[in-house]
Image (cartoon, rainbow, N blue to C red; front, side):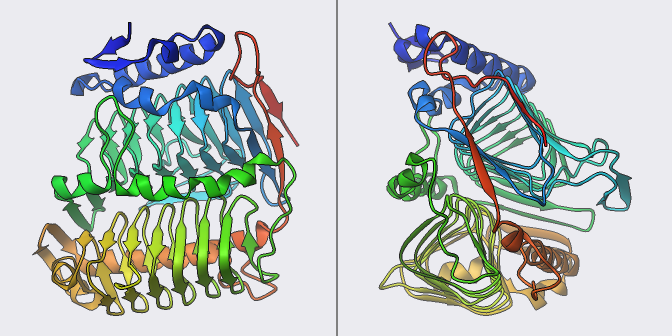
Length: 491
């Protein structure tokens, strides 16, 4: 008989495999704890978690952690399974399951650093550590540093379930559910549901259910909101109850997943040449056909480049896909961004998990200094050229859609009040919104080493050149099968 929960059937062999009972207990405990946090919503995580946690996969992949001269080292793994996951910086994982996740702590703050949030600040007494407890993270990125100044020494992710391709970026998180391709950005989140393909950057969020496809950016100076039409969003991503996520976004990444397999089949793999001495190309990134990189370029692990040209100062962050495209230079493609059959001018910003899909007969051209907001979908039915210095959001398939999902940045800087265009609502100071994005883009370029001159302004592109990787593997037999031994690694 199958096991039933909320009228959803799960194969009993998957749930009660006696050889992985400790793994199953970890999953059960994490699900129960997340559900306890979300009880006010009468929300059950289990029908979403079970289909994406396959015990058979946890013996196939080793975990690996990076060591450099630039980042403090302390890795602790206790009663956890971390198959296929990547760790950099100080990390502690207890009673959790991480599958093919990237815990990238290269921007964690150090002892004595000052964290500023608004007009408040805190000085760290110790190096910051990412602490993951009683959580399930599946193909999830954790990056940046904790923006909660009440506890700046720790970046906690506790009692949380995160579905595939979600981003936890500078967001302390307790008792939450993140749907597939969801993003929590620079936001402290407690007891919340963030639906599929939703993006939140609100500083703090508590006891809130964010609908799928919502883009919500809020500060004391402004608020931007957009929500994808549910029927259109379902074409690209949906998470049916009791099933794995589906849609064109999942199809896109899974179609290319096999290209990553050779990178993980070998323990020792030659690091590919980046093409320039000031650039960094991760050994865990895919490069196919003709790939050209300028200087000061960063290509992170799990990035996918195929017939791609990245001009000087550009970056392709984790889970980015650049296919049949040319990025002229100083381009930021944020975590999960996808660019296909496109030409991007100087300093074009592509936000988290955006999907920019031109076609051979319908190419996409984006002018210089344009900002593509996070979680934008451009899936062209005709050739399209987006002018320079514009803001772009929402769902765009043709010129008519572009008119309802974009505007010149200069026009928004003149807004002091309410503005509605199509499904987008803005209220507040437009100048603050535009200048805030511009400042953040400059910060990203500086942090990634885009302006390195051979002496100063060194960033991730240069610091990532001399990185070594160590691997850890799980028990393969016995009652602890699938778990990793408790390991504590210090300098």
